[in-house]
Length: 181
Ligand SMILES: [Cu+2]
Image 1 (cartoon, rainbow, N blue to C red):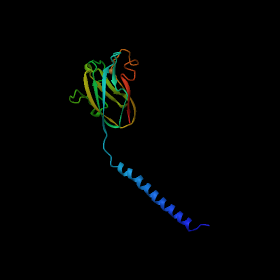
Image 2 (tube, protein in one colour):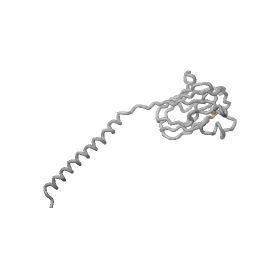
Image 3 (tube, rainbow, N blue to C red):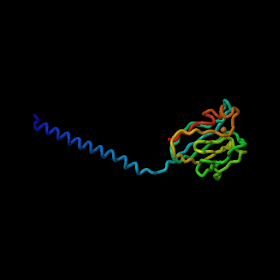
Image 4 (cartoon, rainbow, N blue to C red):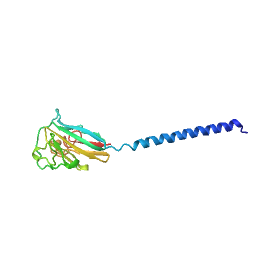
């Protein structure tokens, strides 16, 4: 038989449940309303260096594997390798904002002369082609609107082992992966 104490306990449990469930409802709404206020574009930066490995003489991008967030990414390539020419070069800048790059802080340009291209920074799947004269600093902006892993490579035949051997075809030298998060 249920006495007054039993009914009192049931009522108390029910009251606690209402308070707890109500609290969860309030807590669940708070982050959603805070999230809608953030509509700003993310701008980030990545600095790459091209230098010659002193042990084997191979030029290499560093870092070769890197991550950047989705959005606007401003890239700087400091190329410390010697100047070189690239006969047969596709010397048009593509896939960057405005299809331009800037060399040593000069006015943005959409083309570099083949006689002054030591390396390229190319991402075939994104249509990116950037030319890097040796002993120079190149800057450009990428607009990355999809996440994933994208292989970049240098298109200039800058080694003596063809496109398969080092440095051209070996990750860590003239090819690597850019991960967009
Ligand atoms: Cu190269």
